[in-house]
Length: 119
Picture 1 (tube, rainbow, N blue to C red):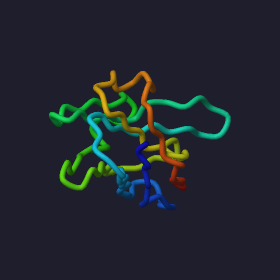
Picture 2: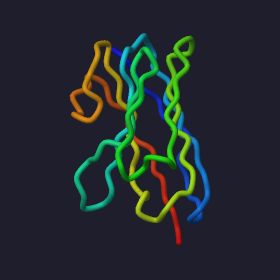
Picture 3: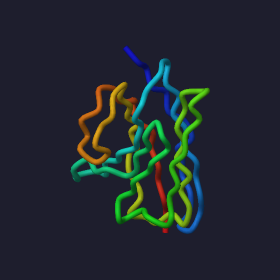
């Protein structure tokens, strides 16, 4: 069993930046971030593989950057130029096997961290 601990959420004005962190208690191969806004379905945000291949949703491409520190089993999500529509609970995900990033078929999920962007 792998535990995921997220940090870095908070409130920011539009145009601002936040960085989310997610530390895994064990080795993982694929990690990613999803988000869920009130009244909406969960959606893929970004993913990173063990070889540092990355993928982003169209809505965040060019504004968010996902990166990983394999030695620390940690993944980061740098969020820049934040918009009110980025407001959501952000969930870290991980798997010990390769996963198609956007499918949500990860074995492990964090508890979520709230990100609120005001206009």
